[in-house]
Image (cartoon, rainbow, N blue to C red; front, side, top):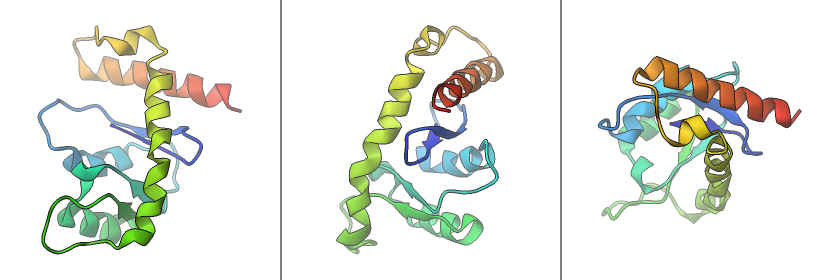
Length: 131
Protein backbone atom coordinates (compact mmCIF):
# COMPACT_ATOMS: atom_id res chain seq x y z
CA UNK A 1 0.00 0.00 0.00
CA UNK A 2 1.27 3.49 -0.81
CA UNK A 3 0.27 7.09 -0.14
CA UNK A 4 1.40 9.94 -2.40
CA UNK A 5 1.14 13.71 -2.35
CA UNK A 6 -0.49 16.02 -4.91
CA UNK A 7 2.39 15.63 -7.36
CA UNK A 8 2.40 11.84 -7.17
CA UNK A 9 5.55 11.63 -5.04
CA UNK A 10 5.54 8.89 -2.39
CA UNK A 11 4.77 9.84 1.21
CA UNK A 12 4.42 6.39 2.75
CA UNK A 13 4.68 2.74 1.73
CA UNK A 14 3.77 -0.38 3.64
CA UNK A 15 3.95 -4.07 2.78
CA UNK A 16 1.51 -6.66 4.12
CA UNK A 17 0.10 -9.96 3.01
CA UNK A 18 -2.63 -10.06 0.40
CA UNK A 19 -5.36 -11.24 2.77
CA UNK A 20 -6.15 -8.17 4.97
CA UNK A 21 -8.89 -5.80 3.95
CA UNK A 22 -7.26 -2.63 2.54
CA UNK A 23 -8.89 -0.09 4.88
CA UNK A 24 -7.30 -1.96 7.79
CA UNK A 25 -3.84 -1.21 6.32
CA UNK A 26 -4.28 2.58 6.16
CA UNK A 27 -3.22 3.34 9.78
CA UNK A 28 -0.11 1.15 9.46
CA UNK A 29 0.79 2.90 6.21
CA UNK A 30 0.31 6.33 7.80
CA UNK A 31 2.57 5.30 10.68
CA UNK A 32 5.28 4.25 8.17
CA UNK A 33 5.35 7.63 6.40
CA UNK A 34 8.58 9.33 5.34
CA UNK A 35 7.65 12.80 6.63
CA UNK A 36 6.30 14.07 9.94
CA UNK A 37 3.40 15.97 8.42
CA UNK A 38 0.19 14.16 7.66
CA UNK A 39 -1.79 14.87 4.52
CA UNK A 40 -5.01 16.84 5.16
CA UNK A 41 -7.10 14.37 3.12
CA UNK A 42 -6.80 10.94 1.55
CA UNK A 43 -8.48 9.92 -1.69
CA UNK A 44 -9.38 6.27 -2.18
CA UNK A 45 -11.61 4.13 -4.33
CA UNK A 46 -14.92 2.54 -3.31
CA UNK A 47 -13.19 -0.04 -1.15
CA UNK A 48 -12.19 2.68 1.31
CA UNK A 49 -15.78 3.79 1.98
CA UNK A 50 -15.99 2.67 5.59
CA UNK A 51 -17.54 4.46 8.55
CA UNK A 52 -14.97 2.92 10.90
CA UNK A 53 -12.07 4.14 8.74
CA UNK A 54 -13.62 7.61 8.40
CA UNK A 55 -13.96 8.05 12.17
CA UNK A 56 -10.53 6.56 12.87
CA UNK A 57 -8.77 8.87 10.41
CA UNK A 58 -10.72 11.91 11.61
CA UNK A 59 -10.24 11.27 15.34
CA UNK A 60 -6.69 9.89 15.50
CA UNK A 61 -4.99 11.63 12.58
CA UNK A 62 -7.20 14.59 11.65
CA UNK A 63 -7.48 13.40 8.04
CA UNK A 64 -10.56 13.64 5.82
CA UNK A 65 -11.22 10.46 3.81
CA UNK A 66 -12.67 11.01 0.32
CA UNK A 67 -14.08 7.90 -1.32
CA UNK A 68 -17.11 7.32 -3.53
CA UNK A 69 -20.01 5.73 -1.72
CA UNK A 70 -20.71 2.08 -2.11
CA UNK A 71 -24.32 1.13 -2.53
CA UNK A 72 -25.76 1.92 0.89
CA UNK A 73 -28.94 3.50 2.16
CA UNK A 74 -27.39 6.44 3.96
CA UNK A 75 -24.89 8.49 1.98
CA UNK A 76 -21.87 9.67 3.97
CA UNK A 77 -20.72 12.38 1.55
CA UNK A 78 -22.33 14.83 -0.77
CA UNK A 79 -20.79 15.55 -4.16
CA UNK A 80 -18.49 18.41 -3.17
CA UNK A 81 -15.52 16.47 -1.77
CA UNK A 82 -15.87 13.86 -4.50
CA UNK A 83 -14.70 16.41 -7.05
CA UNK A 84 -11.22 15.73 -5.71
CA UNK A 85 -11.61 12.06 -6.64
CA UNK A 86 -10.62 12.84 -10.23
CA UNK A 87 -7.07 13.37 -8.92
CA UNK A 88 -6.78 9.70 -8.01
CA UNK A 89 -4.74 9.09 -11.17
CA UNK A 90 -1.68 10.43 -9.36
CA UNK A 91 -1.37 7.33 -7.18
CA UNK A 92 -1.70 5.20 -10.30
CA UNK A 93 1.17 7.18 -11.82
CA UNK A 94 3.25 6.46 -8.69
CA UNK A 95 2.64 2.74 -9.14
CA UNK A 96 3.67 3.07 -12.80
CA UNK A 97 6.90 4.75 -11.68
CA UNK A 98 7.49 1.95 -9.18
CA UNK A 99 6.99 -0.60 -11.96
CA UNK A 100 9.97 0.92 -13.75
CA UNK A 101 12.01 -1.01 -11.19
CA UNK A 102 12.18 -4.50 -12.60
CA UNK A 103 12.67 -6.09 -9.21
CA UNK A 104 9.32 -4.74 -7.96
CA UNK A 105 7.20 -5.90 -10.90
CA UNK A 106 7.70 -9.53 -9.94
CA UNK A 107 8.31 -10.05 -6.26
CA UNK A 108 11.41 -12.21 -6.10
CA UNK A 109 12.09 -11.64 -2.40
CA UNK A 110 10.75 -14.22 0.00
CA UNK A 111 10.80 -11.96 3.05
CA UNK A 112 8.55 -8.91 3.25
CA UNK A 113 11.27 -6.80 4.89
CA UNK A 114 13.56 -7.28 1.88
CA UNK A 115 10.76 -6.37 -0.52
CA UNK A 116 9.92 -3.28 1.55
CA UNK A 117 13.58 -2.25 1.37
CA UNK A 118 13.51 -2.40 -2.42
CA UNK A 119 10.26 -0.42 -2.52
CA UNK A 120 11.78 2.24 -0.27
CA UNK A 121 14.86 2.33 -2.50
CA UNK A 122 12.66 2.87 -5.56
CA UNK A 123 10.74 5.62 -3.69
CA UNK A 124 14.04 7.33 -2.83
CA UNK A 125 15.00 7.12 -6.51
CA UNK A 126 11.70 8.75 -7.51
CA UNK A 127 12.08 11.49 -4.91
CA UNK A 128 15.66 12.24 -5.99
CA UNK A 129 14.62 12.37 -9.62
CA UNK A 130 12.06 15.07 -8.81
CA UNK A 131 14.28 17.37 -6.74
